[in-house]
Amino acid sequence: MVQALGKITISSVRDLGRAGWFLFYSIYMIVRRPGHPAQVLKQMRFIGTKSLFVIVLTAAFTGMVLGLQGYYTLTKFGSEGMLGTAVALSLIRELGPVLAALMVTGRAGSAITAEIGIMRITEQIDALETMALDPFKYLVTPKFIAAIISLPLLCAIFDVVGIYGGWLVGVKLLGVNPGAYFYEMEKAVVWRDVYSGFAKSFSFGLIIAWIGCYKGYYAGHGAEGVSKATTESVVLTSVLILVWDYFLTSVLL
Image (tube, rainbow, N blue to C red; front, side):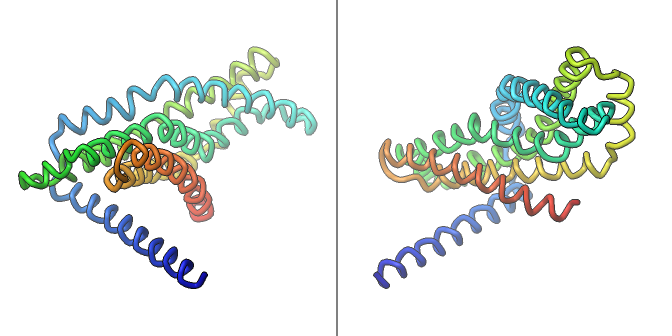
């Protein structure tokens, strides 16, 4: 039992060290050799543009639910006019960055892992190394840059659509004063709230690219190895996003 425990511990420490090195080297390559701009734009289209539909759909219904639940909570205190503030702050500070990152993880993060994992098991990455071409420059750094740029933009779209989703339910359906909805929001939301949301989405983009590329780069052999790496990538990324969100919130409050 002690031997098995020691083996698991050593394996976990080795994996943590390898993941840390992967992140450090990826950031180093972004600074030194970021890759061709066309590759970055291609990945931005894949991670950002193709995620717009799911982001807009999720944001609309999230804002509508917030408007509905917030209204019935605020009516108990006679504060229906604060509905816009409640919806905006909830989305901008927390729900916008987190839900946008989780949606991108499910749609793009899993695909990144599968793509690189298939290249690993079909020895395409080995072929690049044999030709003295750095796989990080062609496969990893464009995805890192694209995710870091795309996530804040998707978060901004999520926030705007969600706020108007809350407006649709609160103002049009439940009869909240439209002037109060936006006026109270304008008074309550400050730059610090917007900054904290963008800081979170920036770091979430880094996490999505890091775990997605890392799991794919070190995927096991065969179809089973790729499917296992993809599952682990989505689960680990989602958990890390939620854990990191707590620590960032405690720092940025």
